[in-house]
Length: 188
Image 1: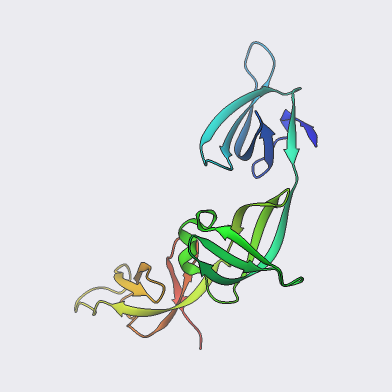
Image 2: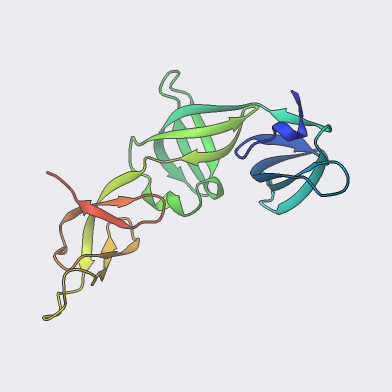
């Protein structure tokens, strides 16, 4: 679908020079002399390379339609992650690279949102938080203040994070899937 360059917004997927790009930032610049133009920072969906491009506001670009589809995590198969469509029960295989560091937070039957462009997956959204068990935590050092001191801990998925001094090994905690940071103790 063609659209004017000044309609480009962050999050859209466009086709340019025969490649698909995800728009990261866009800015309309009006110089003192001459016509306005739009500066767009975008990432190649295949290679991950970033680039900046400029268009006059009257230029047109090809916008690709994206679709969000819910899947359920099934299992890991080598360099791929196998997901199941909860409506049709069909399986889909996605490369681990699409998940990035969040692959460590995948749990059985976890609901995921896969962003598709013309049927091809470009990104995956996990739930914002997951509950994991602390398998290893350093003992509390006497005299530390509880307000700002955190200690390292190892989670059941192999991720290291910083936890408050009152958290001990064997406890379940809630962590953010975005960066693995501690949120709170899990409510039983």
